[in-house]
Image (cartoon, rainbow, N blue to C red; front, side, top):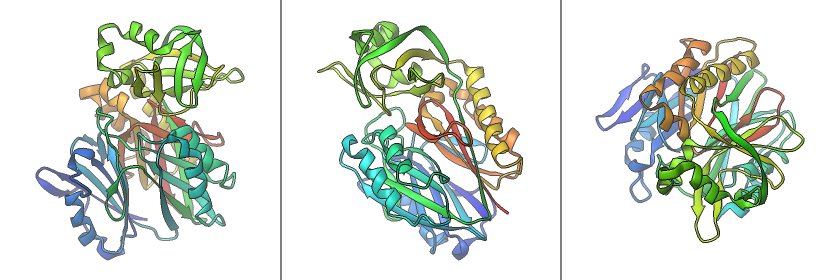
Length: 380
């Protein structure tokens, strides 16, 4: 595998690594600020097509771009890749609204060849998709040995419009996947949070998919506003700092859920993934040191899955809520990953509205919020 990285800022494109791939590049991953999209164009990306004329360009808008050891805003992080022994295919689909999430996953999973398929990487619009249902649609229609990771596109802290880029132009209401094939490709992954629960555990007494209405028979939105106090006026963005921990009756393993929108008309709270009736919910708050430690432990899980072989390429997908909490210390969670994975792994990625991965090797794929999710690749 050969990799090179470049970064666009308001000063133009700059090299992170020597530029040498050119026509050899097969795939370019791009993570970009939604503020750079004008109409249906992301103008700075045209240079990538000239630099890498034979590559498929795939990526999404973000709440912050990760490239090498840095975290950037209003930039384009581009990583060009040449695989020695790995083949890949790509496909995408449009989605009208959240009700089509499962069906969209099903369509994507069935549209690629399954023989010798090793891994699927998925990027989705971050506002029009129920991430839990999307994951379910994918996992139900892919071979059980195929791993899935990815994330939901972001729009900074604004929650207005997100974009997927599939080789032509940025589009909303879209989901794309890449399927990787090859016996020499090794994939590692890990996902951890670091948020602290507080207050009593409550029962979800009324919900519909990813829309929460009641906790313990009370309006969840009113309860949430009570906890937030003066910060309630800044919902849904302020909800990123106080996510919910959700666990089912039959599991001690909790999933973190974060708010995408609130609906005052019916007191509904729209989350990035399902909040099932009968499950247990608990409010959470930030602990800066534990968030950074969570990134460190996620990297260790990922490295163990690779049998402690230093990866060549690593994609970091972390939640926008973590970025808002860590503020000027945000690069520390990237540095924590670097410390574990080694100096030679090319790091790229973005801050998202949802992260897709198993908790650990062998576990089922899930949608997460407020986690650092790591996917590493190595050929050999």
